[in-house]
Length: 306
Image 1 (cartoon, rainbow, N blue to C red):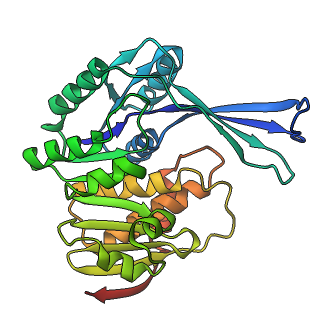
Image 2: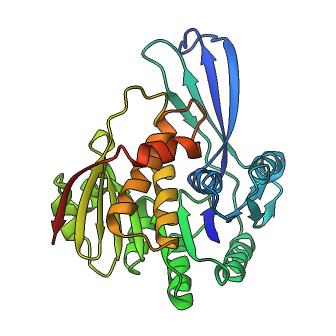
């Protein structure tokens, strides 16, 4: 079982408009809602690829009920505390003009110390059944900065492989606990390691972190495993939306770790998952048939022994 942790899920809403004007009325021509949050995207992708997935979230109010229903329809087991306040909603304005993809992001419901303790208790109860744990995204207000660091320590105690995809102080504190694996994008890596050279960044990350996935947009994936670095990529003829591609890539990493795939197969699967998300208009979603097709088209650009 893959345990996906998504502390701050959201209802991601696309608002389609002919034009968007500041300080003026703008009329919505169409609206589409998606279950969102990095961990939810990971769970949906892994479930689509046939994996047993359990999803740990704070489920807040009416939006939490809707999010949970969307996940359960994809045969995902949902666990975690219920909150009275709604989960956040995030809005993306879609127009044909330069304001396209303007984002408006809510922060999420405030959680108490008791809410946080209940969340960690549920995590502890479920981790013994997990083959791999994926932890990703932001936390709602009220969560301690050491939240992911605490989870990593629990994973170490249970000897459960895990992947972390986070930012800011929570990521920095988690890195001090030597997570098993991390997924980091180039912008985040540049801020942490003061370099824009992928191999320099990967070599700057301690070897105690067994798996490092560095994503660089159109340049693809740089993956470090077992003291080797592999660079994989694919050029797509058309991209509908790249939103959620990093999360789908993390789903591929999680599946590869669960099945103990070698580095090249891990890179192919993960890169194919990220690319498959770009082929569909649905936000943060891939389809199994696309992944199977793309795996054979992934280009392995270099294979370097450290």
